[in-house]
Amino acid sequence: MSTLKTIQLVDGDGAFQGEQLDSFADEIKLAEKRKDYQVVAIMGPQSSGKSTLLNYVFGTQFVMMDAMTGRSQTTKGIWMTKSPKLTDTTTLVRAKT
Image 1 (cartoon, helix red, strand yellow):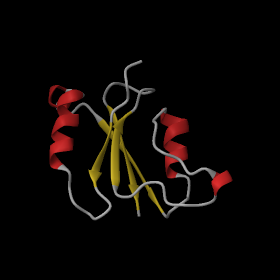
Image 2: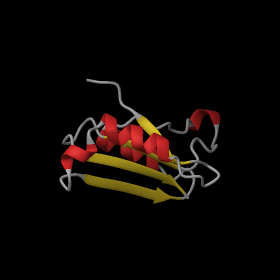
Image 3: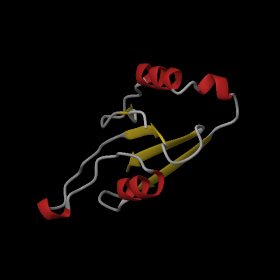
Image 4: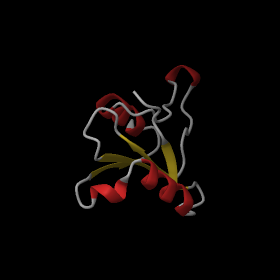
């Protein structure tokens, strides 16, 4: 399995990271897929299990909270990755709200 690339699409201050998106789209050859791709997004309050759900269902590697060290915010902004478990045309988005 290849290394999973995860990008921060929008940072914690709300700034769009266009260069990262361009690089990500080139790497996964998004233009070649034309309209043949799916996007799965999950949003919710802090510590509600968004990263855990995406990691277990889709095999992603989003950072998860460690309950043993207490609740703390692990990610900010909007993150994007490609699912290693699904078709080569499925992209996942995780947003901290």
